[in-house]
Amino acid sequence: MTAELIGTTAALASLIGLTRWAQAVSTRAWGDGSTGRAQAWAVALGALALQTVAAVAAAGPTAGVALVIAAWMALGWLLVLAMNLWPQAALRWARRLGALGGAGCVVALGWLLVRG
Image 1 (cartoon, one colour):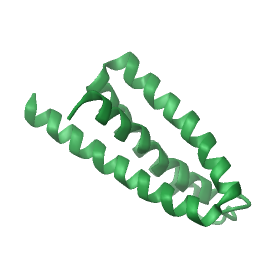
Image 2 (cartoon, one colour):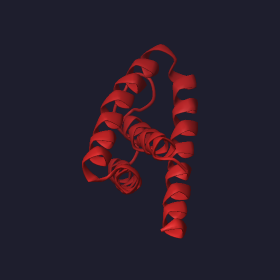
Image 3 (tube, helix red, strand yellow):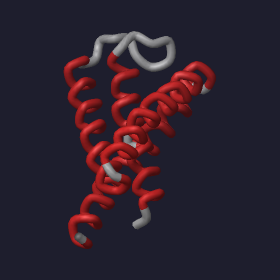
Image 4 (cartoon, one colour):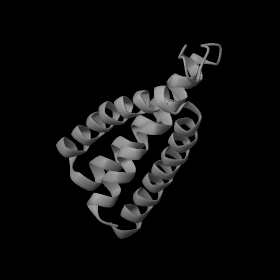
């Protein structure tokens, strides 16, 4: 796997935490704020840790952390935009892409562990 592919999967993994958090707070599109906010924090922090480890392993500490911060900012903004325009499709695709990114991070970390 290349560093670019690992970086892409690490960026997509932020959608795991972003969608869970958007469902835990009161939003027009997805959530009424009644679901577990503690679970949303746990999922968001888990996704953050997973993607940070993958990004740092692929690109180094400075670039990895910068990638994670930029991914949360940019994909968070795009997710809010998509939530307002296409709420059901945005939820469906954000979950799919987030799962793909999380699985990619796990595979990338396994690949880096076996290779190194």
